[in-house]
Amino acid sequence: MSSTLKSTLKYFTILALVLAMGMSVWLLPNKPTKKEKAQPITPPIDAKDEAGRYLQQASENFFYHEFDKAIGNYKKAITVYEKNGKLKKAAQVFESIGDLYKFRRNLKESEKHYKLAMENHRKNKDSLGEARAMSLAGDLYMERKNFPPAGKWYKKGLDLVRNDPPHHIKALLLENMGHYFWKTNNVPEAILQFTQARDTFSALKNQMGYDHMSAVLNKLQTGQSHSHSNPEEGLTYHNSPPPKRSN
Image (cartoon, rainbow, N blue to C red; front, side, top):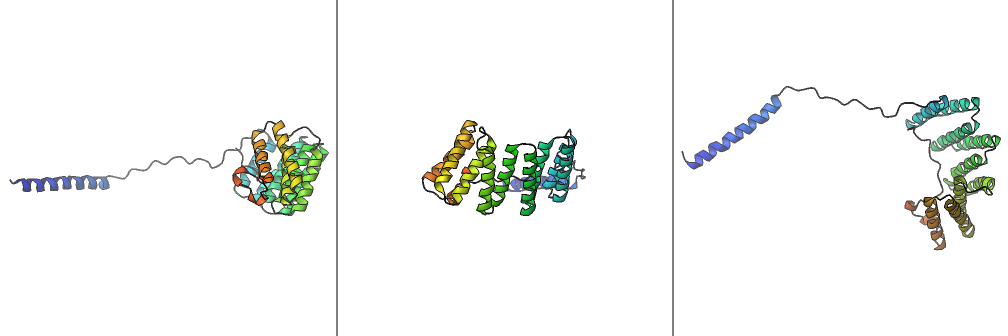
């Protein structure tokens, strides 16, 4: 047999073997595919106390954009906290409702609930809590470039804590006042507020806050406008976050 014929037969033998192997795969009986057990998207409700469970459920509602249910659960948590005499926690939940309404762009209801938070903090003689709620009300207007009411709320909040020892809320209010003055082109006053914010962060040993304020002051001292701020440096007033999903 010639070498050419041998080579041809060898080629067809290999080809037939390959085709046969391929066909065998298609002809094998189908085996059921093992499916992985579906994992829950959200963690279980595991708070130890009743109010905590309502808050967790409200966070889950928010995550799924079930806003009316979230508000209902926040209000249930307030009722339980007030019943148990935990009035400071009840006051904070009003802030969360204000945040939720802000997320929904219902500014009237948002400010209403921030004011309810202020009133309840005031009843509890919690000036830091009241100042925080005022800062949130200021953010509500600052984010919409409505500067006069934003400055009013920031000033009222800062007046409550100006003579207090260094605190994170005080530092943020000083920073927010600085941004208000920067936005309204009062650079000397903006520098004063940012410097005090930087010194407050320094006293708190908050390196990130200190570096942030130093970067802002550098921009002001080099004559850059507020609109020139670099997002990576976070040179904006502090937006209040939406209610967090429970962990």
